[in-house]
Amino acid sequence: MLKHTIMFLVPVFITLVTPIGAHAAIEDELRSMREQIQQLEKRVQQNELNNTSANRPAATAENTFNPAISLILSGTYGSIEQNPDVPITGFALSPNNHGHSRSFSLGESELGISANIDPQFRGVATIALAPEGGSSVENAYVQTSALGHGFNLKMGRFFSGLGYLNELHAHAWDFIDQPLVYRTMWDNQTGEDGLQLKWLAPSDTYVEIGAELGHGRGYPGSDRKDYNGAGSATTYAHIGDDVGISNSWRAGVSLHQTRRVDATSDAFSVTNSFNGDSLTRGADFVWKYAPDGNTQKNTIKFQAEYFQRRETGLLTYDTKGTPVTDSYSVTRSGWYMQGIYQFMPHWRLGLRYDQLDSGNAAVGTALTKVPASYAFIPVRYSLMTDYSASEFSRIRVQAVQDNSRTDLSDNQLFVQYIMSLGAHGAHQF
Image (cartoon, rainbow, N blue to C red; front, side, top):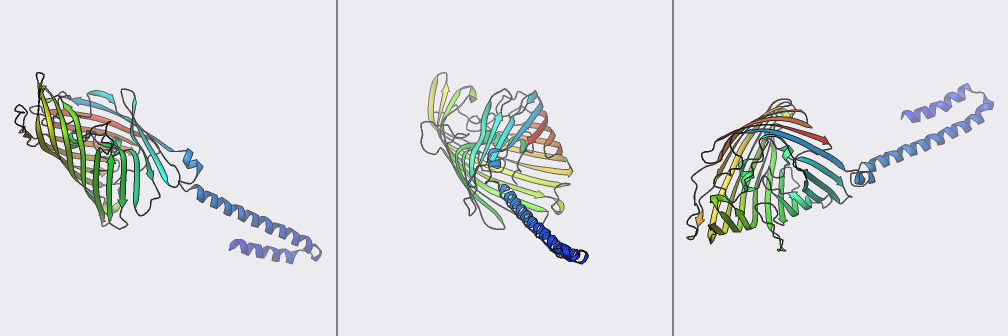
């Protein structure tokens, strides 16, 4: 409006103050000025259009050839009283993943690369750099971005969507290590090479349903190179909502099926081999509280997960070079609950309790020396506090009392740093 008013007043003013003989020349000059202004307007409109197109994430060469890159650096100091190589009691056929070592140690560094490929697909890769050297592919998948109707398809290597903690990378954990149930049942966390399909319901309430088919690469599966079919199948459902402006929650259930082939263990001072089916059920719950929805000052987060696994098959028990094979089935379970309290900006305090149940095994008559029950409940207590100067840095101290092994109580102390460089996306709820 101001521009048009000025363009109207300028010729009127010039007409009043200019001699009559000069009017023709001035009219030509004004006409030229109008044309220049119109050309300038067209240029501005074209620039705005170009900028809008450039901001569409999947449509530009800049986004395609300049992916977001991040690097996570971490390190730990550990003080552990007992030998960390002693396995957890009652979980002989599970991995002994304690996830930490004594003295100073470099944590796993994580290199992340992600970008939109085109309007249809997005790509993500996460490379784990081991402290002792070498690297491994943690995640490498392609994800659809235009299926519509709430559907999303993921193809490649990814962390399974079962439970709550499993999809989180190590730098996003609230404690230095995973709970006992994740360490014994998922070898910290389970990943797959395969397909994942999720559906997000178009409703005010958060409803998500997911299904996965995989090779069965991650524990408790077996890498069966001579098998063409899917080695594992996973389904899960999550539901959540807000309660006012201060509370939010999410709950879920999971089901995981796979087959174990030649799963070995050196427990009982002998060599064991198991072949059979594995079925795991799980439930998870998360609740968050932030006064008036302000997460910068004070927050409370409570979460809990429960998993139960039944394995049925044949166990080969080898004593003194004389293997004996018979039926073996057992149902094991474990759970944890934890709370995180941000009592002031940048500072948090956390408490976690873990518990396992090795169950009672049904053992064939030929396996007379295989324990059917251990009459022992592994538990663990963890107390944590951490300081985050920003969202890119964290210093953490954690004290642990570990009673997961018979007659072997272990007091542990850890100090950890986690630093994030470069672009890094937000984490899940």
